Length: 581
Image (cartoon, rainbow, N blue to C red; front, side, top):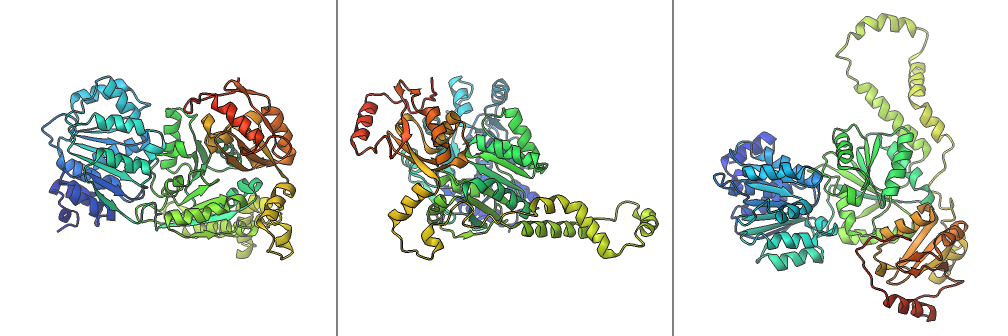
């Protein structure tokens, strides 16, 4: 008996599975399919992306559908257009031997009128993004009264993207559902709240530990000065000539800047961020999926829902502010039993985050050095030689040219031919890396403290902190804006950089509180930031910025109390987008 047949799937679905070449169910499929086939049991499946979750709920749904009833019987809600289309395409493949079952994908960025027409023709399974689905509900273009099965896929991502109210709205409009199936990579409190409010004694299945990382992923990190992030990234790309990967940045400005620099250097890379139209986004993703692009650089928001097979590397140009996001980033590689690498380029001030991540995902991180120039050249050289040896010469009338070639090279030794080939292929690498710095040197920008260089490692923590702030080239600025103004760290970072027209590399640690924040910044650039921001009007008050030690006080002193008192008088619209006037 086929392993999938033993799980309870019918002959038509087993035939589709056989056509796909699947022989053994994944762990989540093996545990989920028998439970979901009952159709009456609420279910929570915790598993990383790339573990076969779509098949785990897709096959049971197709078996439970009554093809004679042309109305929505199953609803799958997912966070992004890309994932919506991927699930729909997978279902089309799964049902190739199951006749007369119709699916429809509804998502933003496409004609809503066309989607409405297709829904009116009668469909059995609707795959939807939250925003477009609610739009259709409000237009009364979709009837969810007869929906029996609701699937929330990538539930944690939907909540991270702010779809909590949308999910509540959808679940309140599917009052006759017989079961709710929730799939998620992690189980934050918000996801647990959904299960408490809308699910009845759900069966919970965890593949691996909660919040754990994929065991097929090698988690690596390197520590470099902030101003050498780009050069370190470039070296890792050059050191892995077969890389097919995604690079993550915190902001769209970083994604665009790094993409432009790498493109100018000759790399096949494009940026994916919120400023792209849907047509531009589809074009970029099409090129990446077809591997016409070697690299994709993206922000977390723009990359949500991307599911591409064969990604070898995920590179964190910067670690995310929210550590839960790391799980989603790393989950883009090491899928379907394949191995992958997730590399994080860290500043020394971020090193503590690595230990937190190790505890969170229950996996060990390996510290790696930035490759030297010679190591990069050597790796590229032998990669080229391997390609040369594996070149297919079976097609083409090469024999016709051999006499001329032999005559041309009769006075040149084999060693000299190889040298000339290497010179043609690698002259640009050799020139670029000829005088390349060792980026692992701790003293490139004073990363080592005096006590460490002298061998005295017993200095107090206060002494080390004072050295960082006083002698490392950084100063601390105070600003009377904080999280109560609707900022989180990434948006606050983007905000101060946009207003000051400075690069992120000049900043150090950012310490945000409710009413105030402190910013470490290169001393040479502190005056420029203060001039650009201090005295501006923001949300009907004057923004104050100054050096922390020379002007404004912390929240627990007189100046801080006064600032908090001023802040209490204001009404915060934390969701509203604001700008200087």
